[in-house]
Length: 303
Image 1: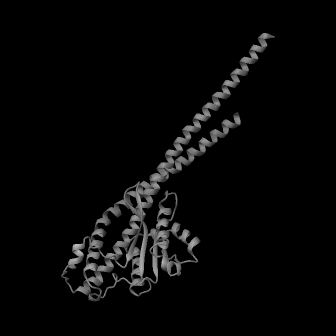
Image 2: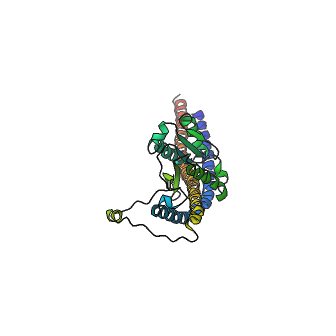
Image 3: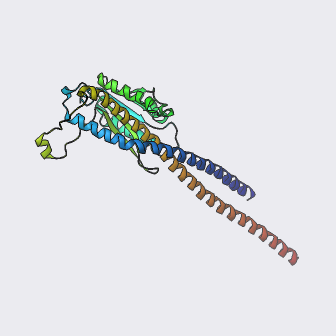
């Protein structure tokens, strides 16, 4: 019985030690989340408006009117998939959900080129790189140049990846670029997403009447149209790619904070159960000792 009590005491100490670690990790993630959330909340309205403006422009201008071809739909012969995960685990199902979106893209919209081996997978974050390197190394071209991008999420550094994607598309090396990432809503909710980055998706006409009218917006450009769009469109695409990374960064810390909070609560419940078991075992041991003493005293009296 003494050995059993000792085991329970040691287990209680072990769970308490784990609880201190999860509580500390929760506090660290909460601090990082505050900064990451502030960054994505500030940039999201700006990028959403820019993206809407870009889609409007690309939907209302003929491809032969401009030199920029980021909205040009080509036959799909080669594609690029960007998967944005975290460098570390202990963040719930965040990484696995984003990876699942990337796998669904390979098996869905990119399946035709994936079967031919014509897919480049750019991994941002160690977890995504480890997964795809282990399982898809022979089926796709795994690019690890930007695995540690989260070490520096400055606009200039992230823009290097966006510039590479735009160059690959404009030169005809790749015909489509899709990005799998985690869209941040709040600390408890993150949505895994996979969006088409290039070519720029056209705005879908909502009604049959508008389709029949076939009207287009008449934009007035100042300065000259090509000069403006040659500068404006790449800048918008760079900002959009920055939002993908900031969204994933905030989602990671939100998921980790939630996971560590849940782990801390589970540890507290486990400690309560262990203490109840310890007290029961201790009470049983005391009761047994008292019974033995009483029985011995009764035996002596009968003698």
